[in-house]
Image: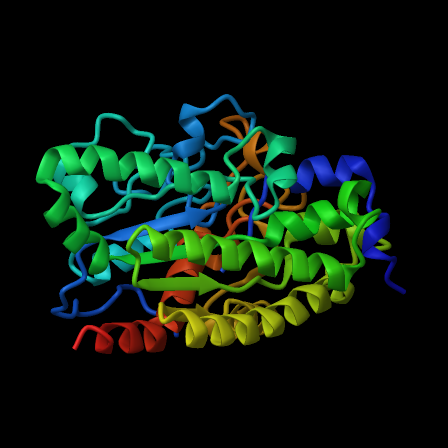
Length: 365
């Protein structure tokens, strides 16, 4: 029998807060790059889009050390919470923009890198500002302040008129919410105030606030990602299941919360797009990811409930370090550490988003 997710202990919360949300037709490449007028990609959210921003702020939530980045182009840690690239890297590569989406807080970035897009994401962050405060990271809505700073910088480089055209033709991505629900389930600062349904509504209002702010800054095309099956993350299984070492099944109570939120999010986005006029594209990581977790062999994976790093049961961030044992072939694992997917899984997920990308590209014509 599963226990109530609201009863998770604070130690579990501290471990799980090194996570963020995860986000499917498998391929070893992103395929031919379409010829389209997308000017840039801008990403906001948590570790699913953080390309290394946390390296530049005072937080313990970092991954700028081996074995992270083992399979990246440089075979060096980048601040990404995986062994290689993120979905946003595949996105810019597929569109023919550049090979990877860099972190905005890397102040060595030149004009060309800035003009073609950056990530403002911060691992451990959330839509709820209290979520981010726990890990001393950048709340999603505060990431908009960095975007405003970006606008000021790029104005000085290319001028206001060129910048307005750049923003108009850019694609904006938001991937956040998993950390918020982990926080809700593990500490009382929100669960004492909100029911599950109430907290879902609270976060949906934050999404609307984010979209409105981006729209006011000139954004026209915004991609919003739903939540993954939170209860299938290896660390969650380890610490939440009755016997987390031997019973490696997903925690369905947490998955249900994520699934229900995604349904409400889709409805809210449709209503908001209709009334606001901004073009919103929803992507669903839940179904494809749970399909591959439940049928790993069908997709070329061997391990679905353990990460590649260490035992694969609890190691994440500082617990996944140069002294950790690391599997020889990460492509056989769905998860890299106990919370974050491998590069192969991210590519798998990116390929599942291609129908959305096709719709997005048609919106330019």
